Length: 139
Image (cartoon, rainbow, N blue to C red; front, side, top):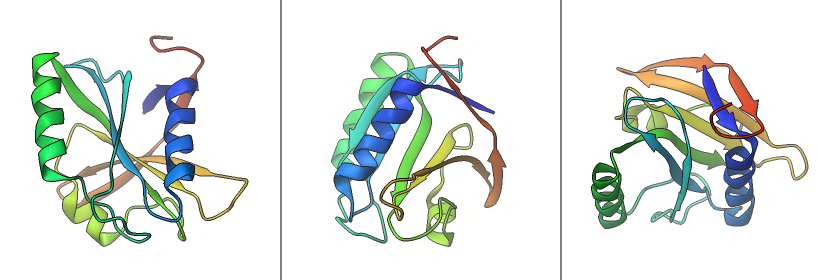
């Protein structure tokens, strides 16, 4: 189960809406070993595409070095789908390389109602998980 603060959920949704019609992507880091998504890190979609996202390799390297220095890990890896439901595509599944991460997908296909879902993706197997939104981190 993913437990995440309302503030972080709203930041992810705002990023997805701002980058629409291109897919948005980013990471929410948390203290290593805690499974607590705390630090919202929006990234640039290097592909600048409405159907695909890609982290810039230098930005990603910098981010992992920064997380390592802060004793953090990627708790949530998120991206948006602009025209389809919030479910991992075959490409999303093939690129999922963090077995401990929650993969959050946001669909911005509807202008008012946004779909926000979370998955575990391990060895190509996708498992949807419940999302609990709390008012503040650590609740």
